[in-house]
Length: 310
Image: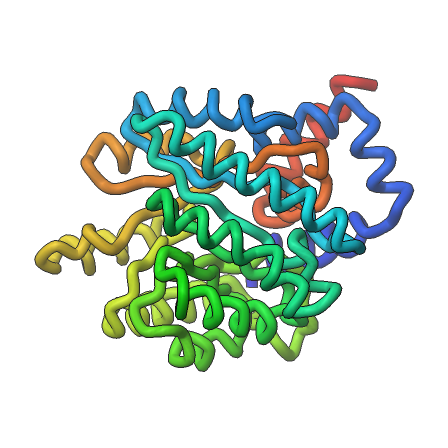
């Protein structure tokens, strides 16, 4: 079991929930400096600027306005306008290839499935009308069943919708068999602090499950977004898909803004489809803590910036 998964990851995610820690990070130059590495900025215009920049390297984009767990329908409706603005902005520039990613709790899932669906549906409809993909993000284990319920509602009416599946969760091995036929899947490892009995605890197990899930999805003809920076997993996918006729028509690599840009450019230069997730917005703290927990190098980057600001 790697140090990052067995010790650092749960420690960082648990520690980060303390309000005084959040206040310390969000108010310091160090916190904002690290956030700027992983977050495009606070506005959609800044996300568009980053998208245009990486498009020069042959890399496409996925936009995500940061935030989660809204507490009222009014908040969720405000967020919906932000997502609709993303779709409009993406279509305003034909040169941009952009997928929109939505978080269910950002659209009222904590209120009810019905509330979330009523707020999400116009986004899906607009995505379908304009030819834009809308991907539904997967959050912690408590939301999986409700998120999959929303996906089934979405995909039945709006086929240009998909969902994220996490190889970290044990249940994902069964969930992939209940997905709508042919729906697009963003395969990720997972970044939430979960009960130990619900997840694979070692990196080796998470990676093995990632490979199994990829094989299952591929054999069931799902379009797959392979969301990882792991060189071993990437090489395995390349070997498998390279051997298929037209395999890359339904498989692409996805990576995070600010993480391994060298690898992103290398794959794109070799002709592989690469899409970068570009988050933006003012509510960056939860996103930042998950990025710090994923890799010790990210944590060191934060601590070194902290030392320079003292």
